[in-house]
Length: 66
Image (cartoon, rainbow, N blue to C red):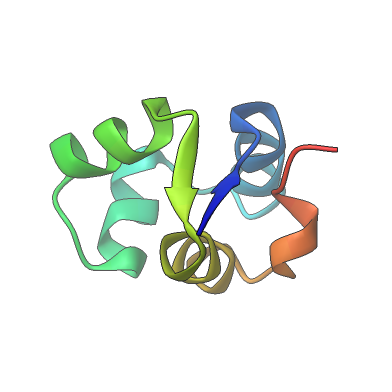
């Protein structure tokens, strides 16, 4: 199962935490290059969406597209 994540919502969550893509990658546990690949995907697995939300310190519903 995959979820559509909103790059804009992720960017807003990063901005609220003053977090760079590199900082998000570090919190998630991947390289900056891999994080950019994840962020540029339209759909990610539910586990990936959950890990992104956890790394950002938000609920997963805050980064899923409406």
